[in-house]
Length: 159
Image (tube, rainbow, N blue to C red; front, side, top):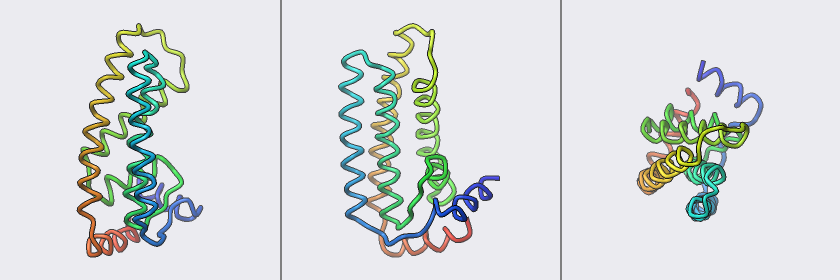
């Protein structure tokens, strides 16, 4: 089912190989860092739901950075997250960003009746997970070299 989804994205030209780009990678990494600053500021000002969204986008932008570093362009959040697991074999990172995405969708699109204390706890936990994600993801990006990128691009064809 997962591979079928990725193949559908490929057919729709929403998932494709592009030229690997360190510049685009760095731009998305910077965007990610700015989202993290925003998430922290929003949390400090008790804007928990907004902070949750920015925490997710911190992770997502760094994931996009990784993909562009490897020369993969994906115009779908779910597809990008799935590639983290299937292509990069990063199960822990996949879980962190998947959980953050669920939380963001829940807080962005639905009204909640939970008390602010619960939302505050969720926000703080998500911020901790986001910082963990950022540290781990930076190592993954840093460890990419021409050989590993070539291998990923070959495996992209069969995923």
